[in-house]
Length: 386
Image (cartoon, rainbow, N blue to C red; front, top):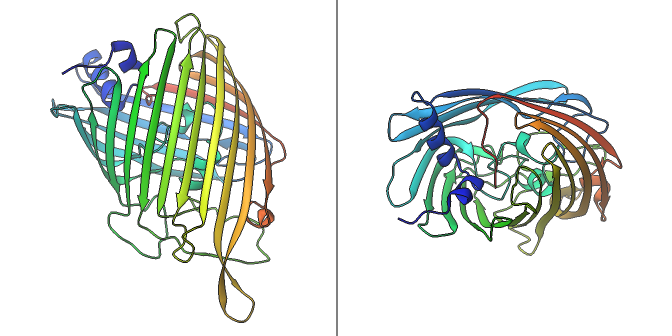
């Protein structure tokens, strides 16, 4: 079976490849690690996960390793603050095959979905303090769930992976009008290659079929903010996503300096049975420049357009209406990374809401928010995306 070139395999490291390396480096194979993500935010972003003031971001404790020759396993506990309270949850607890033939790999348990470009990686490995609006709006920021996965990696000169997943959907939509099983299914395709020793690219297409219908929002003129329950803020039956990543290293060494461009787009349809033509959409474009082995600067622009179904009752009975609104977000960041275990980041973000229902759907956009972030890893930590 033909395999991708070694440097391409490493640059697109999946959990499988990481586990293979860990098992070879340590006969026992088991590793323990922790990540501390702490920071300070001057003003909470709309749809943001970080509280105003001092806060604990996506921090976790992790253990992983082989279960004999044919399986590997991972478990992680995530800890963070939300509205001033310390919260924790089991983010991953899964078993995965290591020796299936024909490029196949299966996983079962709780894990992050492969949908989109960023979702599978841990948030503390991101280039910015908050994920793009399309993730925060459509996937609850970071969607993990209980389910099963089957991947197939093609025996081709370029990287080509096809994956299918089935989940309970309970982490995606906490409270559902109907409860089908499985609650969510995904299909994803990833491909990419090195053009030469200076240029590389990766492209992805993914689809999420959501079978759990969220309750319709009940409009209240007196409300002043969002329901802060975890999960997707805007839902629908069909979420389609596309992503494209390009990297350029002028001297051929990614560790010294490189530029990476990341584009993602999402379209969410089937938001209500009575309005099949209504859609949500979102897009993000980011550029990050590593101009020194220890320094990076980056910029990102996001757009989110939604049509939230609402029930209005003016005394004559409930009536379904749609609240149309748009949210734009721009971010600039500078990061200092003295080694691969530490990141010190400063980010400036600005938001602007528009549309007839902007004040209702996005009531508290941050005109200006300054964020400081410190990420420190101890021991084993999650693989980064391409």
